[in-house]
Image (cartoon, rainbow, N blue to C red; front, side, top):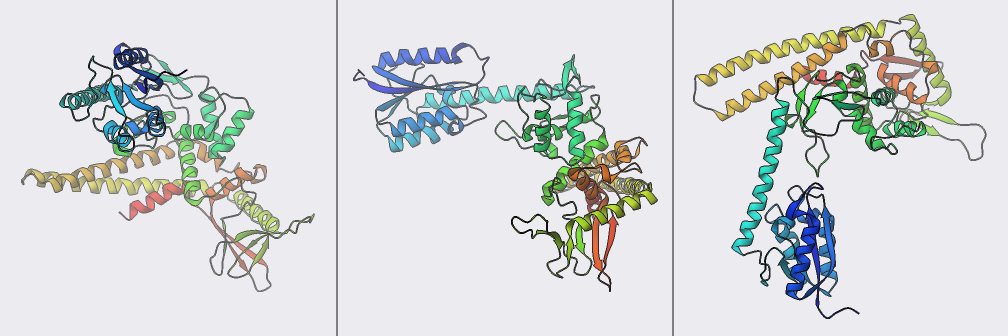
Length: 498
């Protein structure tokens, strides 16, 4: 039988599982139980946020704090809220008062709050000067800890040979002294990039690894999110990248200004051209919403040579029909092409072109890349001259924030151009690189499955224009790309205009 004492709920929080001393959950509970005896109340339930930072997460974002708030508002038998001290409910000064205390009081003005850190019977008051000082001190303590952690990371990163700050090694690598080396999972990383370069989606790759019973980074099943994370890490190129995430609450990648980048720090698991092909395919699929595993091989590539509309794929197969009636159709002109016939015709034509001129694509791509390098050299030289003039002018005049901002913008632009130039130069640096092998004379479209075939077609073909002659015969005109690096081409075309 329940007593007639006032019923209370208690809140505990531990920011780190390794945390000891007065912030341990056990000591917080013991202090609140002692306070409950002193106040003549009975604790009905403890709400415990374990390993949750009150500096990174405000009160309304913590799961157990949210549950406590809901319980108190909806359970009229609860009339007291207990907590250990101000540092346990907030490290941001005002969030607990505004988001929890005030909202509970507005709906349940009878509810009283008590801090267990002390021997007083006095109800906790958020406007008491001592309370405010405690909140400020808790915030200052967390701010100092955060600053010290960031400063220590910067020291490690800014050594002559930069070291990756303390963190779990990425999948495929392990710590050896102050550096990272490949482990037995490195071939799996290469396999993931290899499959992605052939157009396989993150979900398809995850299914493949699960069928092969290869454990994921968490030692369980693979998910598309795990594959996407691996495909986004430049560390597999040998680069050290830091401040990559915006924060604990936001998993989005930081902008380039917030990322510390050091190239060629580790032995790479994958080559640059494989990385580039994968990133380009990711961008292509994200921007066009194309699915490389579509059974309709030419979907998205066929265009009408008369009205320039893209052919749509239509299935007119009646129910229970054994014969398939699948076509490509120009909605504007009414042209209809039998899907299987036109696909076989176009693929045969591409294979024939490749056989007659096996090195044409590689030669054209090589020339294009060389042209981009020369273009970037000219742009970099031009920007450096402008930078020297601006810096000389700044020395001869008074401090001008606008000129300083412009100078910094030019410096960043030069750095971006130099980075792009280095990337393209590396794609040209060796004869035996993946992209040359992939798009060389040994390509055989007949051996590829649907996903692989569609991927290669989008990498080597700009568009297939369809016209009919006077007799009604289909006359395809295949416009080939100059380089498989389609999005790099877009970046360079934009560069020409800046």
